[in-house]
Image 1 (cartoon, rainbow, N blue to C red):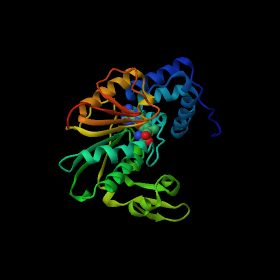
Image 2: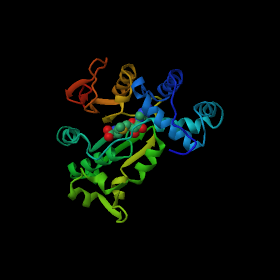
Image 3: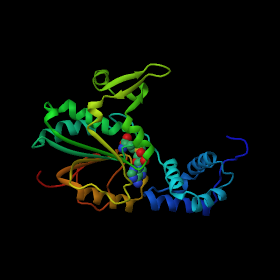
Image 4: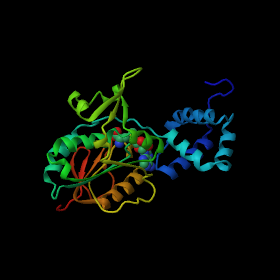
Amino acid sequence: MDAGLTPVRLEKAQFERISQLVHRLTGINLHPGKQELVNARLTKRLRALGLKSLDAYMEYLKRDDPEGELVAMIEAMTTNKTSFFREPQHFDYMGRQIVPGLRNRKIRIWSAGCSSGEEPYSIAILLDETIQDFALWDISLLATDLSSRMIAYARKGIYDKNCLRDVPPLLISKYFTCIERSPVCRYQVIEPLRRHVHFARLNLMEEWPMGGSFDVIFCRNVMIYFDKPTQEQLVNRFWKLLKPGGHLFVGHSESLAGSQHKLRYVQPAIYMKPGIK
Ligand SMILES: C[S@@+](CC[C@H](N)C(=O)[O-])C[C@H]1O[C@@H](n2cnc3c(N)ncnc32)[C@H](O)[C@@H]1O
């Protein structure tokens, strides 16, 4: 900890103000159990800005460059944990059940809440491995996240060796190039694969600019941070954007039980919009 900056301790009213702001802007539910985490993360923001107290920070949020700091504050509150081929059942299901049933060599996928890119690149690898005439397909793979920092990172597609621990060596040699050996081994996703993923910043709580509909939407380990009404609204917005017969994948620790929606449960963490493709 920097000398001269004691860690922030939010009072109840201050915590409520911050959590209401975060909820309004991002849907993220900072319940009282998260107070310690919020204290720690705000302390980092104060340190980055050279501010000495929470009151000064609240004033700063109100007056100076609020847009820039709001984004930084929200980014500090989110968790970006992810990995390649996380929750592999989804990739198995996609390769076995979804891709073989597609017509017209066309697939449209959205990774909503893609963090640093491991999820959409895993999807791209799965497609390339499953589709024999991949080059002839019209593949659209959209990957969005609230965090511009994560999107910039994801676009580069550069990962330390330990991030590739769940990628089989054969796939590493096929889809990654070693770009640095020391001090740590770093790999970059090969350009022909990166080209297939279109990254953009998008807050799921705001308007969605994309038209058309998707065969598969991945929104995994994102809704876990939202309260039930926000989750329900989001799932119903996803429903509108899915093709009939399209699938929604959620994280395995997330459940749509208790939410009002028109999706059909397929198996844990997999839902389908009823209808014929
Ligand atoms: C834990 S990561 C999950 C990454 C990936 N989907 C996975 O399952 O490995 C959650 C991501 O959701 C993003 N997120 C949180 N709230 C969001 C919002 N309102 N709109 C868009 N993305 C959001 C965070 O920035 C973070 O990168």
